[in-house]
Length: 219
Image (cartoon, rainbow, N blue to C red; front, side):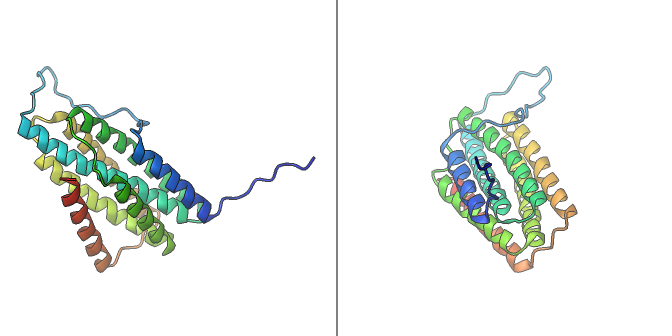
């Protein structure tokens, strides 16, 4: 009897597998691997949100949920297009942490009575393709793309901490934890030898993020 022969997955195999995981995450309510961050309010009673505050928090958390959909897909695509097993593992670890963020923001949307973006499959598919394309330029530039993405997300989350209602301590705890995680991803990618992104690429990334943010706030 011939022994079973294991076949090394090709880049195309890994890319197709990433598409399957992406579709699964978009169509379901994912479960996070880490406990959800909770607000420390001490002995104070939680303050109820007004209807206007609830709507604004829901819109902002919908944008953040879309951002996590995109981030998870980006790193899936980058892992699929890298030939370095160490970097594949790094991107997959980052994607798993983004999966926690995805679960936290999805749960918070439900609590706020808000829905996810209707365009999530589009966001996911586009981000997955962008991650794969970034990987095709080589690992240093793929890591540089990650650094620039995470630095922009850090700034975006800091802005949302300014915009979220003060009374919405639940959303604020999640966003603050996400902001720290994103910074950690950028620092680790930089330490692994990320190449800086050219300014035209950075500008295009900022423009794409603005379009996504404005659209997801409403749709």
